[in-house]
Length: 461
Ligand SMILES: Nc1ncnc2c1ncn2[C@@H]1O[C@H](COP(=O)(O)OP(=O)(O)OP(=O)(O)O)[C@@H](O)[C@H]1O
Ligand SMILES: [Mg+2]
Image (cartoon, rainbow, N blue to C red; front, top):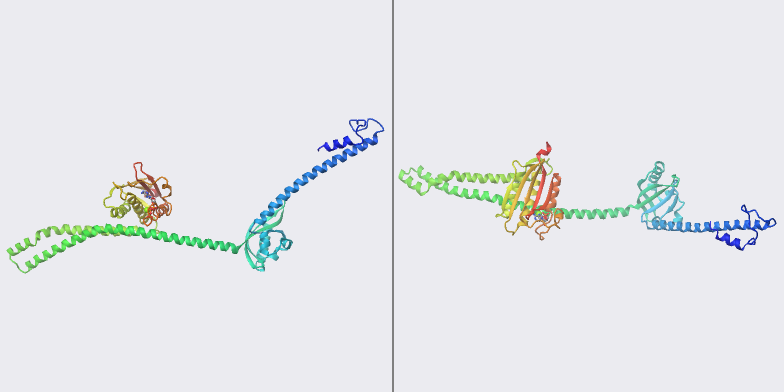
């Protein structure tokens, strides 16, 4: 306790300058008793006064802190856009915020003290009562929907209720926070519309990419079919010429021509040559027809449905077909080195892996366009229950600042109209669905290497 005030008073008091007191305050000089008593009283008063001053100062500091906290809480409540209603356990309103005042069109004073049921539309009073009872008895937070009775009519509100406790941990009230559902629904429907729009745009782009790959597929297949068909066509023409000559010769035989005439006809119609050519011409036709049959079989196999169960398939055949259909048709002079183990199998959907391979080869071909010494190296390996194919090109490689983005949908460095940037992102998704991996890197000697890893039959055993 500060003593300064007491000391000052003592100095100016009537007892100052009198005989000194003993250690226990008993006057040393008899007869000065009255003076000593006065001094004691004044000293006591002085102490009490000093105590009061200190308490006053402390109280003022506490008041200031309390006002600050109150201001802060009032600011918080005022800033809330959700309705806040605090009520006691019997459901009588104890406090509301500005949002609640606005919603009910009433000042806080008019709301405080009213039963909560008054503020709720009759249609949802039973629900509200249930919610309050549940909270009070089971002491838990409850999410519900009430319909409040507002001046604008019934307003549906999503309500979150929690119990309020006093410092001793006793439940003393309920705090309800509500958000008008109309607002939520509007926000939700805006979001849903934006999402729909996005989905639609994405579907269109995926469709465009599908059409583009279908176009590439058709071009590749057409090119592949062209070879054997022109082979069959050419041989059929030769066969027709041979048939004409053979028929003319046979006609002479049937007409009973003599040996000399037949010999002359045989030479003129080059019957011996036609006869010798018959077998290889027919064999060529057969080979061409078989090649056409194989290509069609590949097409059927590769267009298998994703819903089918994954199966063990010939990965080598898939790789070869993709290279044939893409690379050979677009870059006839491309040097291709293919090193695949035998057998080379994987587990999955051959049609989808064919699509992946076609995309990888297509990217390689695009990267090597108008570059000297274009060379495509395809290497396969089976190890540890996986089958791995790497596709290396002699293009410029993938720039370091781009490599982390090449699997992103719509990322492309190709000119508008040439690439959609969906190729690798679709490949990535397909490979992920196969529990495989697709990795991109650059070869130290130049060019990009894309590596596809798929589960192989050993993984199942
Ligand atoms: N072999 C490669 N060499 C160099 N860059 C590549 C190679 N493969 C892919 N890229 C880069 O990755 C980008 C994305 O490839 P992605 O296949 O996803 O799309 P795209 O080929 O551009 O278009 P789309 O495949 O839809 O026609 C390419 O634009 C290219 O920049
Ligand atoms: Mg591509």
